[in-house]
Image (tube, rainbow, N blue to C red):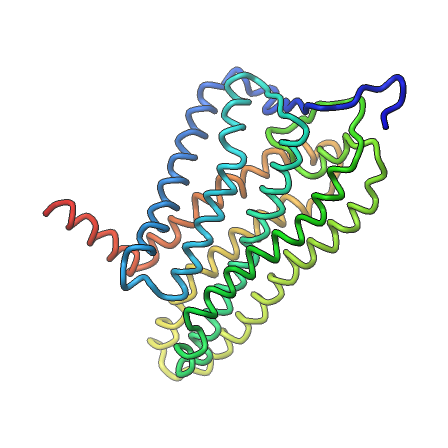
Length: 311
């Protein structure tokens, strides 16, 4: 319960990009175009993988779900951000703010860690156990890995959500951010959040560090397998099959580390507001580019669609 001189918070006011609102039209246009490119690029990948026969392989099945997570992650933030830019701030109901926080970070963000780890496991089997790959990575296992990723992240995140919705929020109701990020939102809580912070730390290990460790281990095995190959052409060809995924790993975890591993003080909190744009708009934009520019099979599928439109 709130004290007598405090008001129960039912709405959160997001201040957005203070100091940049004189450029709000330019900001709005830039982020709207970026959002359009993100949606277009990822939806094209989802469509191609779903309709093109030669893309119905485990790697592209996982890529489709990675693109789905990108679309959901960006959509949970950018439309609200555009409203905040246009109107120089915005107000969200408290329940919506908490749901945005846990859908964005808890589900759509963390599920990418699992799917990227599953993709690295797929590359490990394809390169280190090529003769058994088809029998090991069958449709049933692919489906189980994807469903397991989404369901495990949802269950783990829900445990934090049930704790957070019981907190009291009294007094201050504004956040100097353009979405309800974990740190700024929890700073408004007047309840003891130590248990939630501990739970969030443990969950972050399960949903970030564990998949990252699996990625590191699988790529060590992949690199040693490539080094043992006698032919230089075989080495280059084999490495090219996982280069796109390795680039995605570097981009995704690089942005997470730059935001959440930085020291937290007042100045870095302001910087993190802008750093968070890296994984909200940059990473979902870069993933389709990586797989469309560096992947011949995606290019082939796009060419087929263009040929069909011409004839």
